[in-house]
Amino acid sequence: MGCGELKIRSYDVQVHRAGVEDLERRCEVGPTERVLCIDTMGDPICRIRNSPMCKMLVAELGSELVGVIQGSIKLATVHKPPKNIAKLGYVLGLRIAPLHRRKGIGSTLVLELEKWFIANVVDYAYMATEKDNEASVNLFINKLGYANFRTPAILVNPVDHRALRLSSKTEVAKLKVEEAEFLYRKFMTSTEFFPDDIGNILRNKLSLGTWVAYPRGESWDDFGSDGKVLPRSWAMLSVWNSGELFKLRLGKAPLSCFLYTKSSILIDKIFPCFKLPAIPDFLSPFGFYFMYGVHHEGSLSGKLVQHLCQFVHNMATKSKDCKVIVTEVGGKDILRLHIPYWKSLSCPEDLWCIKTLKNEENTIHQLPKAPPTTTSLFVDPREV
Image (cartoon, rainbow, N blue to C red):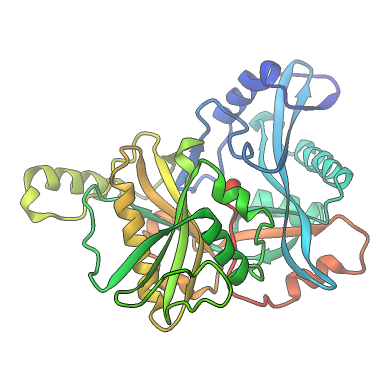
């Protein structure tokens, strides 16, 4: 066991990589009941690598690496007068060695990361955790002054190796990056946490594209400029290939998940003519697609969102590595009714907490209590 004074240092890949990998192996990546866990594939900073600004800190006791934390900074929409754009610092990846927990190392790492946020004029720090993760909730809310902000839902849907039959009543078109950025800025800039650098996200090599769906027979020409008429009903979303950065693995999934997985594979091999939905083999680390920027307009848009989800599923069937499709939506967003997901793999109530880093009168209490101006929530794929 390490001994001596606790030291906080910036992550150095040459010095700390092996220690961080060892720490990850010794730590639970989430609470014990968590179904899906993260496999960084030997790249500890993979989850923040594509952020505009990022930092990773490590805690050392003597020669032992006992803790780690990551953070990123961006400009995004936060509804607080007199302006709706704020600089946000995202806290993630806090890990403490099991033998060194409850010694204040976690709070020390968070406070050091907040110093970096403050030095870069960040308005708010925020973090996400499972609602029933008591240790995380106690640290951030009870000890460090964070407040409950939003409770989005993480929806996870397995990828069947068979393509789904798409409705002939719907058209799907892929947008150019410029067209997608135009529509996002026109329709989603008021959405909470909408990133100011949406163009950079759309141009990132991990963003596979943006697609729109609309009723067949309606026109979708020259829509990327003001004054052009859009279909009465339409929907759009973008897809991020998160599996290129890190993999998911199955943690303590319900026994029914394993049984259904194995039985579906066996039945499919013995009776392929039945064409039953086959659940992927989750026993090895696997990749996934993340759907982001889901938006819909019009009375038929719910069905159009469903159609786009099926379209993305069919894209995923062409990838040997992609075994699930993930998205995250506002807790009260009607989109939840139109996006397919498997309840056993999903998280119905994720918890976002926020803290002001500037001395503004009661800001931290006003934000969580203020009703959101929209039920939508933009989840940055770089922070998944």
